[in-house]
Length: 237
Image 1 (cartoon, rainbow, N blue to C red):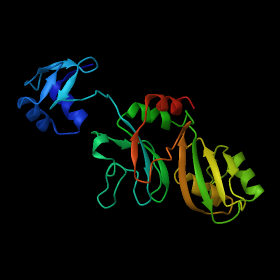
Image 2: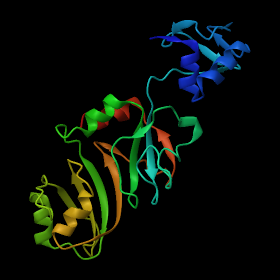
Image 3: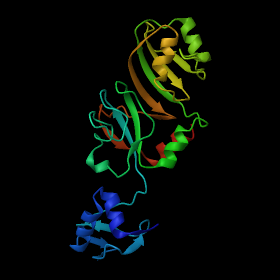
Image 4: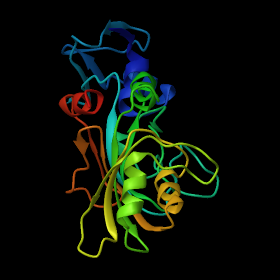
């Protein structure tokens, strides 16, 4: 992939194009061991070794981030009043044009996928793909057998919207904590599904997208990069 040097430094280091040009003109950047002071010079980003102040800059066309989203943070790129998931991405993972692939409610926690790859996001969010997403829901009341059957066979929401069938497992003896897997992403869907059977979600956590589970070593608000193999486990689900 042929790129301009200043554009490459800007994108990979998450700095402005002007700052990238300054680094290059000051002699801080080398290409294949040779100092380059021309911001407009071009090179093959996939084959060349690029260093800034002696530190190698690995080329990544896109980045994919797993976040354990905390409560109180909105799934948006920016908000004038409320902290967003992009705001809490650590500097070493930040890139231009990052956005959340899908959304979680402000008070919902768990697996949030953040990327700058629009094509990938479209593929996993497309309704035709039916990529499964699994949640842990803490309920106000015990989920009845009838309510569970309704969810599994396709709940009808209060506005008449028909949901696809879900997979529901009760994971506590009292019947108030359920694991639920859905294959679509309607607005507030999990909460509305349980409301349709006379129950209420009091806490909600997403634990997987496709076949990729949330890394339980991540504390709320923490992030890590997703590997290429893990990405495949999402798409192949």
